[in-house]
Length: 285
Image: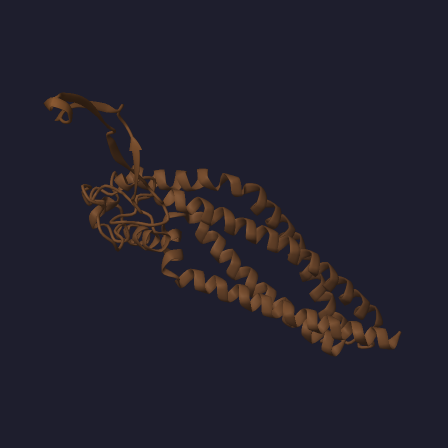
């Protein structure tokens, strides 16, 4: 039993060390989201996104502390530290399960939340040029990062051609002004009119006979198709279109990761309980 207890204690230490690293990673990701220009831009127009970022930072800090307690408790076989670790781990487990379920279930309502937030901004200022400087800077950073223009439409800017992030590298498609949103214009010939006939007269052959022939000509015009992933001149998709998959994918990732990590935490709690049961050090540390 002593050998098995020692192995479990080592496994518990490894688990807590990884748990501590995960906490540091969450803390680093949260800080990066605070300073990243695109993320800052999204936070300036979506308050709930900023709240989520600070929750990630708090979760990282708490996870780091709990992982440290677990490492110390496993090394010293301290019942006090291991009990504290188990209690905190159980609380984190419950919160993670709840957060994971909410993130997965509620990700479908993100579009309405984004639309409401954008509508509130546009209600207060008819055009984005009239919005506060911080909001304008945030929208422009978001446009640059997500390759979009405007919140719900390019017309959210009174002059989208002058808005930072709306324009992209490339040339304007022939015949289209700079303000017309086009991207990856592909020419495809398609018949749009019935064949037309035109008589033609030729002289040939026998005894100078004049023969009338008819030439059939098919009239075609070029049409254009737009590829939203490639821009020529100006981005035409509003940011609400780009934000929807961006937020839904990330919320799904967070939800699944939280549920998977919570299952792993059950193993950590079990290991901790075994070590507590077999610990010889009863002195609180």
